[in-house]
Image (cartoon, rainbow, N blue to C red; front, side, top):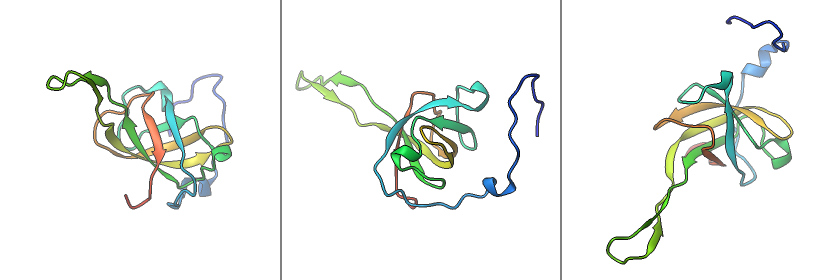
Length: 127
């Protein structure tokens, strides 16, 4: 579907591998986005990303995960103590190919820019 650089590794296209049914995860899984397809850094809807969790963590094709960014701890100006702000919800992704230790996912919804290092956790498919 696009140019292929010399020395690139190739894989046969399996027409059935593109079809993925949404499935509920039976495990609570938390992880991190470790890479974007083609080393892309600013990620959004329809981009492919890779996460650090896979079949060994009980992820399967079709599992939905939410994407979020942890917030900072800041000083409360009124009480003069530290508080941690809530995480910022950034979107959702779906596992399209679960490997043993990592998974390829497609971002299905983005509410803001998603970066490598943002956190993911399993979510109910209808949430």
